[in-house]
Image (cartoon, rainbow, N blue to C red; front, side, top):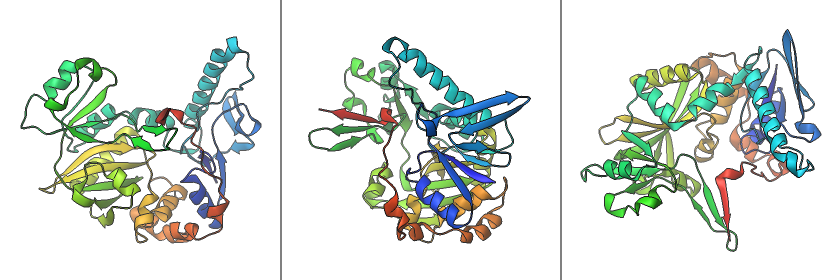
Length: 363
C-alpha cells in the first residue's frame, strides 16, 4: 500500500503529513493534478480492467488516495489561440475522467470525488444535515432583492450574511488584504436593489453563541474542539489567524454524533471539518462542512490535540477503524511540533496557490 496525495508537495498540509508518513515507514507520492508538463501527465488504460498512471506513479490496488487539493487542469500555453478553448475543455474533461475513475477501482478514496462535488454545495449540506437530525439555522440563499428584504422584514429576527466561497482582495500597491467573513445585516443597512444582484449571498438566522466548535470527522469517529474568541467573535477565522483563540477538546453530545455519522453516510464521505455554533442553552447548531477542511492548525494551538497523528492513523488503518484503533496507532507518527522543529520544514518551497478564483488583485 502507498499513499497518493493529490496536491502540490508543498501544500500546507501535504508537506508535514508526507514527512510524518515517511518517518513512519510509509511510501507517499504527491501528484498536483493533470497538466501538460511531464510530471503532471496522466494515462488511463481500460481493457476490462482499468489502469491509472499519474505522472511517474502507478495507482495500484490497495492504495489510499487522498484527494487533498488538486490543481486546476493546465493546458500547454503554446496551443494556437483559436484552439485554446478546445484544449482547455479537453484537459478539464480528462481531469474529471481521472477523478471519477479513481473511485471505481480497488483503492480507497478520501473522499470519493463524486461525493466531494455534491457535499461542497452549501445548500445540499444544510438539507442533508437537517434530514440527518442536526439542528440548522433557517437559511435563504438568493440574488433576489425582494427575497433579501423579505428575510430582513422582521426586526426581531437577527440575520447574518455569508459568502458561498472564501475570497481575498489584495491591494497591489500596498499589499493590504480584505477577506470575506460572516457579518450581521439589518434592513436599514441594505443598499439599492441593483447592488443586491451583484453577487448572490447566504442570509441566515443568527445563532447567539456561547462558543464555536470545530469538529473533525475521521471515518466513524468524531473529535470536537471548542473555540473561544474575544467577545464571542461572529467569524472566528480571523481570530485564529491572529492567534486570538483558545481551543479545548470537548465531548460531542451523543445525539449530535449520531446525526453527524448519519450525515456522513448519506453524503458518502469519510473525512471532513464541520463547524457548529453552541448557543447559550447548550444546543449545537450545524453551520457547514468542508470535506477537505484544514485541521493541522488545531495542533498549532494545542499540543494535546495530536490531530496530525489521528488523521494519519485514520489514513493508514482499514476503512471503518474505531476511535480506540486510531488513538492506539496515532503514536506511531511524529507530531506537528516534531515537524515544526525539523529541518524538513525549511526545505519546503513557498506554497504557490493556483486556485486563482479565491484572489482578486486590485490596482
